[in-house]
Length: 362
Image (cartoon, rainbow, N blue to C red; front, side):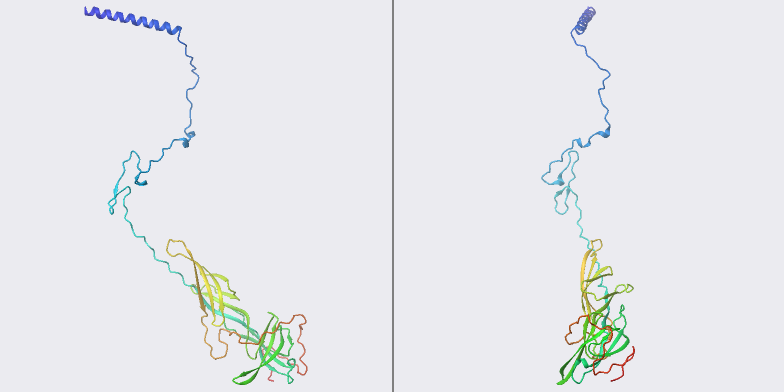
């Protein structure tokens, strides 16, 4: 009986399923729209990886700062490392590093000033007044004047002493012009002074030098200096370096030596001495940036012997001129004779004197 019931159930289910399938096929074929398929169209597009716009990618914003500061920022997936400060006992996000004292390197010593003042050459006026014979009536134009024209050694580095290498005697009166020497006797002046209560006549002869257009008031046997001078400076750090030889250096005269810049600020002829300023770059400690250093000093002339006889010029340094009469005005150049003018009336013409000889005594 059980088998017959089960078989009847299978037959009924099969009939119902067949009826439903038949009904569905008939309904779809009449009422449902048909789909239109375009099998030639592409449903995707190839894109090269290099054409992707990286800037368009979304970037995550940073995490919100915590109350403990930036050192307490952690991502979501990494557990934080917490350290304990060995001195304070507080928690910290960074490990403790032992603090070390800053290493201070020793200072580099500054170099010496590096200069020596070894010579000062002053050019003397080449004319010296030998003697004057005043006229009996006191007329200066009738006086007879004897001069000595000297030739001295040329200035050289390291040379201070002037050496006379030639002498020539000249004689004449006021207005006399000497063509070869380019000098002229401009005038004569006599002043009476008292020396230890004794009256004494001091004669001053004005001689004009047409090479520098200056007038020199000469007194007997006294030497006058021109404004030309030369000084020599040498490196005291490297003696093999050529010396610095300067003519008439004015203030602010600069030169370079010993990897530094030097500037002359003053020259004193009395001592003598020269004031200088030095500027150079110096590294205070190794590894630091070089800084500019400015130093000043006064150099005395070295190697100058003391004078052997009081009142005579000091060897190696020519003396400064003493008190003299006020300089006379420079006359105009026009009208200056090119040949020696005749001797004043009443005065015999001077005998010719050859270079290197002295005139006979009067």
